[in-house]
Length: 323
Image 1 (cartoon, rainbow, N blue to C red):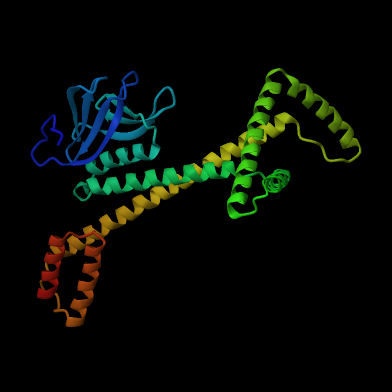
Image 2: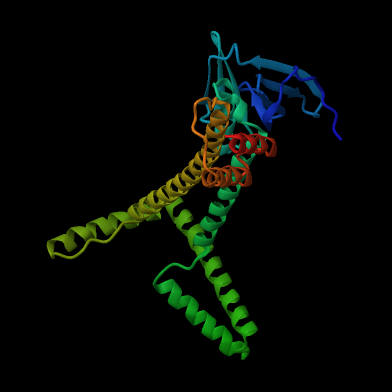
């Protein structure tokens, strides 16, 4: 079991923690940021993982915690303390992880800090990482799919040729034929991309585009559809790639926000249940047995969902039975 390198204050609890953190623009990603219910703690480590002490930023001195941007465009946490700014960046570059870090600090500075614990933030982070990985794999799968039209026919022809050549028409033979055809197609695509880049570098593509544009002038006179230049095709590819990345990021943001909303809904339900528990029931008419049973079922569902602890459930149960 690892030994704690420093002592927490009385009543202080860790609610979130992130490693491989840079402090300051020229710092190394060797530190750890620990968020507690009392402060933000920077655990400082050297390049050899040697512990060098801590810096503590109590919430009483922090004016604001926001997501900022370093001069190199890297997203970072910025703590505004008095007249200066302390900045921290994550080596992972994971924006959702950074969002949770900032969310944890602001939650702990808010009036409902007691309801947000380590499990709350950990649940959001795990869900966000799983989502990122799923979308990454989906994107790769789409990239490796054969393109429509001629390429599909070409691959089908290769598969048929491989089958006839091998004479193996079993499921295994078909699988091998498809794998071999896809491999050739992929290799062809790589070589084609390299050739395009080479021709572009030596200026051949520019000359081709000039002839294409000259031809388009004649096509326009005869009412024919103009052809795309290489530069236009390249621009289209870049715009489509940009849009694809934006769509993936929007999916990530949407799923991340949904998870946060779900967790906050559980917190709100817990707050309501505890608030009702604290309210005096003086002059409240006695509930019927049926009403008691219905209310008990509702409270039990909160226990099953993890919103209430067993202790809170028992207290609420006694309150209902005594009403």
